[in-house]
Length: 92
View 1 (cartoon, rainbow, N blue to C red):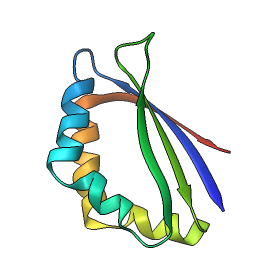
View 2: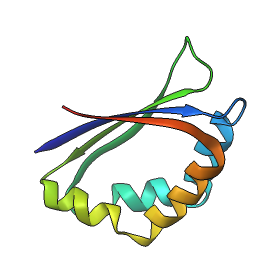
View 3: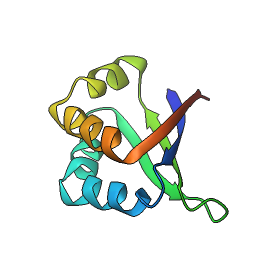
View 4: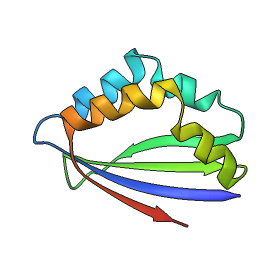
């Protein structure tokens, strides 16, 4: 099993836009339906209005690798480029 935690730091004032677009464009639903996806949840910081925590859990590294190649992930990258200033990835 693969567990990842990702800290996103949104560009000032863009956190809500990022989350709204991920949901409205169907990206979150598509990811959660992927084979091998056990968890894909966003959490908001109470202390930093621009921070988002993403917790991911996958059956295998291969499932997560395939996930990164999906068409909806290309759309997510565009949204991240527009709304996110910094990303920190941690493998648990």
